Image (tube, rainbow, N blue to C red; front, side, top):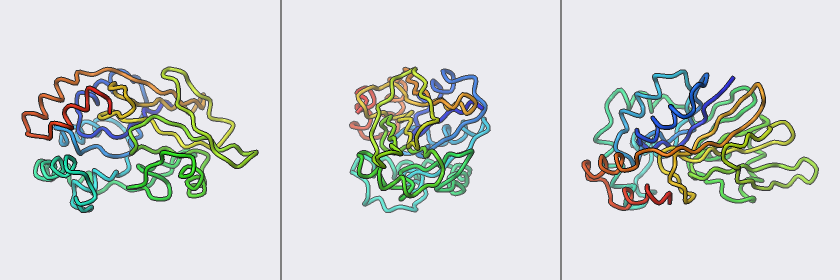
Length: 242
């Protein structure tokens, strides 16, 4: 099977469409949460993913849109965007988001948004956090998002210690030797200095993981955000990838 693995779309429809076109053909989508938040098209992104066979877990921005997290936990720009999102999302979008689980297991892969220890909020950014996380899932592999950074944590079975890899774009990585935590980066708001949408292709026949990047018309998303009165900093950061 050929899976499109995406995370942190953040209501960025042009970025989502670029990924869908670039990744085709694929058999199914695995989404790691944060379909909404920050961006201008929450209803459209939730509707679009339902055009495909898919599974999806909940992210912190999905919960915030539903009022399941206090906005005090977010910075000023994110709070403003969430207030707008809460008013904008339709009952159909709300129903979809409410049904998202926080954790799934599929074919030897654990899917969460943040971490296997704390699926909604924890950021996996360093080796210490990764080491702890390996004890919170029993499958060979765990897929995470949330950081907006494409990254792989590898657990060395000999030493019992992890190390980190920043995967090369377009270079399939074999998945057979070690337990791994894999992050495909962000579709709608990358933060690694590369503004192109980030995603991964998981091939379970070849057992490979391939990081992909694709440009999208950032100016269209920015114009939609301006029209909706979303914060200027959120608009500007899209072209910086920060």
